[in-house]
Length: 99
Image 1 (cartoon, rainbow, N blue to C red):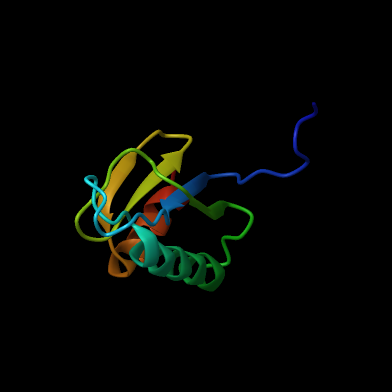
Image 2 (tube, rainbow, N blue to C red):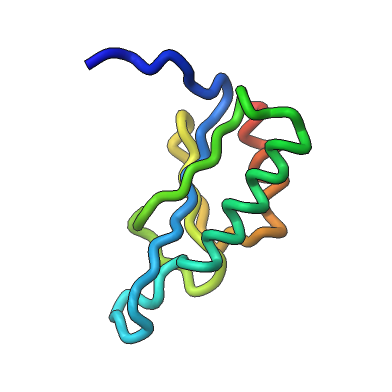
């Protein structure tokens, strides 16, 4: 094992894109809603020139299944947001940049 040669200098945003069956007792998951959040966050990172400071990654379940939007975890702060939509993406990226 060895440390990775690169890491984000400010934050790493993990966006749930887990999809469940519509009949699942926990709900359908974040699925396509999460995917749209990922794309919006990646656009905000690119437009802000933040690729070395803020990373955005897709992930599976974060343990919180919102009925709208997606769940997003922020490292290194440990913050967890629910019901995040594409409209919230730029604001979360901006907040993470200052982390």
